[in-house]
Length: 298
Length: 171
View 1 (cartoon, chains in turn blue, green):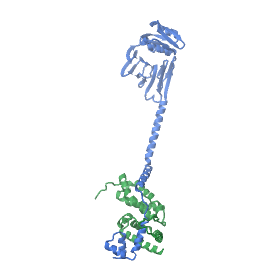
View 2 (cartoon, rainbow over the protein chains, first blue to last red):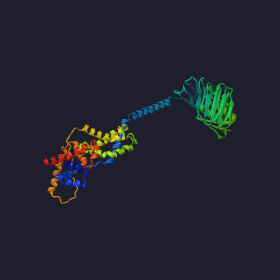
View 3 (tube, rainbow over the protein chains, first blue to last red):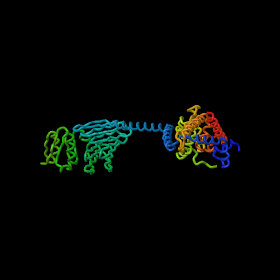
């Protein structure tokens, strides 16, 4: 075997025993062995595979997210949409218009569709001007008279019930523990805690103590528009509350009178006459003390 | 014909397997060819990141040559031919205790000579030689790693050995 082939075989660690002997016989074999030992000292530094791989993983995710720019785009667009929607709704809510009638005053208001509202003392009406064209809806706390222009459904939302009409004249009175709808013209649909009632002109619905009562009226407009409150079989507490609202007074009386039904009326222009009008029929007496009135049975 | 299970290397499992299989070889390849100062570990990372970015178009059986070509090009782009001086490891395994000071000095001088001679080798020969002598790789393995024929590997290693021998004697 040639010397070169022998060395090459030795380099490949592929020598047979006989060949190894022949290799050792070579002049330079000890030199080669020495070189081999020396070469081993030039080993590459240790490569920490696991540490390096976890480092690579981090780099890889960074490289990956950088290459998927479109994802950032999409999320940017999504964020912009969310913000603009948010602004849109926020602005819509801020477009809410509120009409307030304080105690002892009445307020007229023309709605965007020329429907008329008159608020009785101590009442609040709110509606959204922006969404008015798609939905005619108002929220009411207290009592109001509506003269609704013809058109789509007109809804009055109150804490106790919902009133829907197309075009008519009616009053809604939503007071604590008392709810009343009076229809003066056209047709009104009242929803009250699952109960639905249709009122034609001259019909009214009263609810107190969670019990509905049907009634009729011969009037064409509520009397309070003419500075006079009229009641037909109305619980006495509501009558007293109404007088308090009209004159901005706090009225106290015995609890026993609360649910006594009262029929009659009082004027909005003179407190003494008004008090006499509601006390004499029930044989009560009253004392006025600044802003307070106390009712007592004789 | 066998159809490979994965037609690309985008699967985490496949990718990590490739890493475990080739990272050390790539690292050593770069170290022996270009030396420590090119930071072989960083080059390994860069090569694998390139592979990850192109994982969709790289079939598994092409991944190895992809990696070696990329790492070679990456390093070449960074440096143009330069003299590579490898550091020999200072610590010597102490298997014999009766070293005379002369012997230690002689050994030291020999290593320095070897180092210089190694630096004079062309990079192809040096890489093949060190992979063979230090890493103990067979000629066949080296020919696969470097993408050259087995005969060429034999030639390179033998030539390197002879050159080193002559150079060390001369110095």
